[in-house]
Image (cartoon, rainbow, N blue to C red):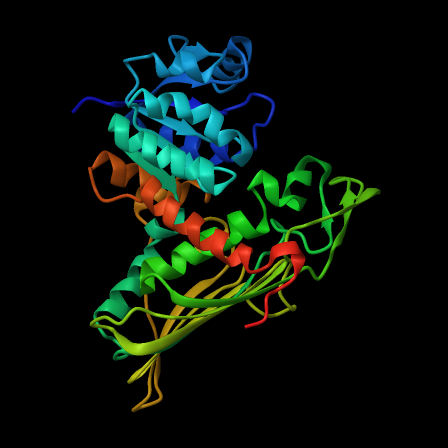
Length: 385
């Protein structure tokens, strides 16, 4: 079978620890990745920058170097364009490829602003571009196992679900590094609300179905944020943020073969680390016959960094009050890769096999949900019901 020829937008030689390098590149250059994909081109801010990255990562010298998205979009020998730039650059860097009908993968969020997201979806429909959005939690073995337990009625029909999640070091509570000032501004689209809640919300709805009748309360607990040097911890400045750092959501789950009519879901998502000794993520499913409990010590979602610590899955039977630990496992090839590449690699595998992967239309639905939640907080104040 012919290899899928990949072009990466945003693989920089100056940021070797970027998501594009330790998640995407790690898989693509692994034996598992090389069996399905080849890196055919890089696109950066200039041809020189792309050539520098080709040398930095010891890619095939025949790898093409592009300095503009428009030039990349004209290449007929590219099978998949992968965009790993900052969120506020997504739209301008992938629009030419989408219009040209190239297949495109974009990391979540799709773009900064619902209007841009809607346009990308519409352009993809017109051109026939096959699209993928990077919602990696969907490929996590524990998520697939939980989905299986729920859909098979292991604890009877669900009556409720509760999610408590802490953003950890990725999403500051009261400080931010100079390189990540964009986290303090909603308009960039890459922040605690759009990135963090977006991933968490998709994780929950992938398992339980799209939440209905949502009520929300958002709060800025820390409106003033210190800008700290990562190495010295010196406070360089103080900035005001317009990003909420506490998010409370309540809603109703859609009725199904495994969810009772009127079943509720409650989510609490906050920035910063959890109380010492408590997990970063606690997710409880309550059914008619028992409960399912997921705990992750190290991260707010199950898509990326949670596996730096224990991640457990347990089932409780109401009749006997016995608690059973449920096993789940990574594939052997995943264990050979750095942690960030585990679920990203699984996404590439699913795409190569022609399996169902989340498209731009899925991203649009999530962006619409986030936009509706945020609109209830206009001017930094929650509307009363």
